[in-house]
Length: 181
Image (cartoon, rainbow, N blue to C red; front, side):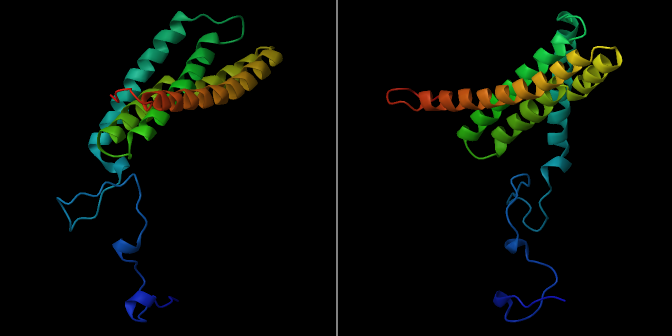
């Protein structure tokens, strides 16, 4: 059963008007095709390509670093460093993009390329989970606990630090006498 909408003159309407719906930042609305329904970002090939490209590059960087940074016994230092630096960088990037304006156009493309794509490929919480499990099954339960807790706690702190640094950079750029670039 539907209830009458006051703006429809008392007539019940099963489908809400497009104008009654909230605006979703992941849907681009363009005037080029006013009769067409806007297509969500996650269904646009150009954006999918940005995420895929960023993810491929991020995965390559992660693999390179994980091969260069040796483990300290059962503790996978490389993956730990990758996840912590990735959490910091993601906080920094997203905070910076937030201060630059609305999530549209070039800023949206950067968020998808760097935030979703590159950082999604660079950080690896699946390998983190495997590392914790391997420490436990390999007889190094304390290393597994330490690795698991440190990654989550230090990762959260790194993310907050990235956000704080991004905010501070924006405050510094806004100081009188500074040229905003």
